[in-house]
Image 1 (cartoon, rainbow, N blue to C red):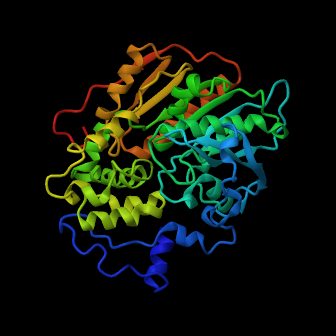
Image 2 (image 1 turned 90 degrees about the horizontal axis):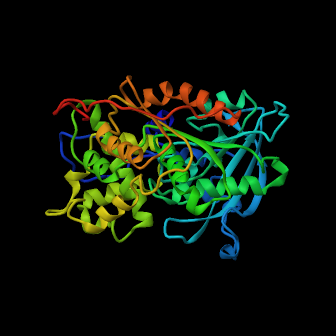
Length: 431
């Protein structure tokens, strides 16, 4: 993001005059920012929007879910530096949230460490994509070296495990909907269908934090009904919202201190959900002209500039008079239908959440955890005593690596437990 700002300051990119024309003076004052995809346009690797490899086949409906449409070998990079692993990308058929056929990609990474005695285990790593541009998807950022969670796969690669990294928000980048689970499961079908990878009979575990946890847990919930041919040994997630209605209500209004950063998640949610549910998330009907301009500006960005522009800018200040999320039954139904807990995973789950998470407060997580527990989920939930959302991505990673590694080596998942915490006192920021 800093490179984009410097470029803008040098005159290469300039903000659109008068964007937005007005906004409350006590809110985020950032002007329109250059988007990350603009930076990627300067690189020699074409973005997905410009790369014909990602194109739909003319007979897409004839492909079965998980069937490979095309494949290629690519170079994986970290910060632009080639990384010594074998990476194969698969474009495969899957379904959107309305069960329409679509294609998306997955990247299968195999380390050079020999594996013998069984099929090489696989960790399906769902990155927190949280973006509205396909140039922010891992199939592209792995190639240019900007995958923000790249270092987190090291613990499994060093053991010789293969890594599956799907574009589980699709090439049109939806967000927090149940088609994420379908895309994860179909990526694993595609991986199994490519015999050359040698992973057809591999044990599989799912991992994801925040937005990545959303795709992982939705896949675990849908496995039994949508993809019974995909065997999941376990799922480790953290920092993921359960009740989307409660999350939207929290992120929609002004919040004090660090919790005001959460406002960007509602702008991201509105922009992305409007793609799958245009009649419900209709900016022209619900938002002021300034709000409509902001949603339009959020239509092709990565998480960084969405966060920078949307934080401390509550969308509630941009509703037309008499309008709100709660006043729209269609919006409420979309959020309710896509909240976690519609189904119970039929495999073990490890779930953690921070004691104070400024983006996703405990109040939107604990009821879903309790519902899982009451309905007999094979659940291990614990509270991380460390505050702050990003910090908990790091502190929760070592236990997740150890637990998933044990499962993939044939060890039991361990006893179920629900070590949750009491809610923070009334009035505490982010309660």
